[in-house]
Image (tube, one colour):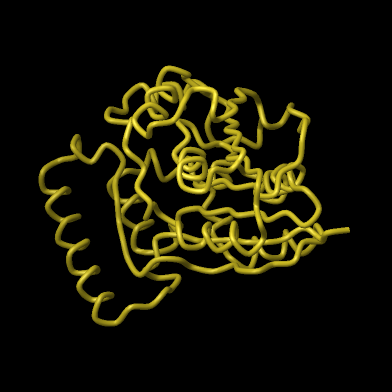
Length: 251
């Protein structure tokens, strides 16, 4: 368990603090274009979201693409997931849910699409957690991983105004070339590895931050959005996310 930067108690507390989790997941949910292209071009039928409680991407994939979807996480509070499904006009049994320790679980099946969004940065050994993702992939399947880019302005914001949140992230793994190299070493073809999004910043539990911090954050957010709308580009300095797409050989 030394690979973990968090533990189960952290995530229980994290999710129990949250309110308004049962959102209506929109068709233009973050990374929708990238996922839609993968599903169409690779004829994806099955998918698993790792570390995705309460299951926003699992719901997105079922709701808009009607995939056979599984959600796997270390902590699952089923009533919350059920409420999310109901908010999106889905039945409880339409998404398979597995509550387990990823480091002890042996995949019972392989999938066309294996994705995680905001998972791998909570582990010390980046190569190990990515290998565990690959273990769920079918031959010819696609790996899709996203994570925050705390080497950008957003990371400075986290470090200054939310150091407790900053320290549970592995900053070293926030490197597209590092991630690509790990995948290539495992025999995968890297389709995409780079920075994603023109600009954004956020703070956990922002409503509980001091008023001056919230005002400063709003000023920086507004200025950054205006600047990157005029001159849109992805970069290590400004982009809020990193995106990795890789494919397992079909044989």
